[in-house]
Image (cartoon, rainbow, N blue to C red; front, side, top):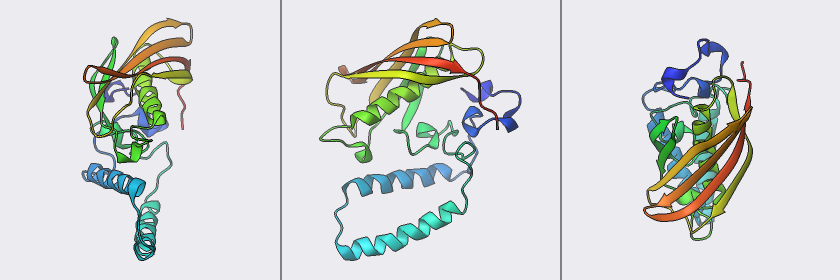
Amino acid sequence: MRETDAPDRPEQLPAWANPNTHAGGPHFGEMIDQVRRVMDAARVIDPDDALASGLIADLAAIATRMEAAAATPSMAPGDSRIDLPGRGNVALPPFTMVSDGPDGVVAETVFRTFHLGEGAAHGGYVSLFFDELAGYAAMHAISDGMPRTAFLKVDYRSLTPVGRTLTGKVWVEGTEGRKLFLRGSLHDGERLCAEMEALFLTVPMPRL
């Protein structure tokens, strides 16, 4: 859902249903970048005990400050900032929309060190990226409610690299009542990394 598509009563809807470019303040994006940097470092760090002990105190202090500013998950800005990669949600691979319309969505992403499996991006994060894009594509095929994942299958055609700009595409192939049938692809240049097929169901939009 885009900012112009927000429902008429935003105060009763979760933050992700009301996309914006301001929640969390002007430095929110830079903060999220640093959190992602810590996540990358945590994936590969091999500390001695002195460093680990010092980092425990440092990270505990940071976590305490962040927890003091916590909102409910549905109202936190870290899923609604459409100006940030992955909407500012650190749980998602950082992606940027290239096109988003009724013919489908196209997005670019760079899987990071945090997303490493064994020598390539972990397949679970590839699936997560597809699931996210499928939600965008499904929104264009419904007039009311929201899409929920019922089934998602990924065929891994070749290793998905980290540190390279990849292109994901997802589109709705057809609908049947509440059912939406989607397909997608992930490419590294001309090389096909993965393909996806999914079934989404339309459900009522939750209200707070």
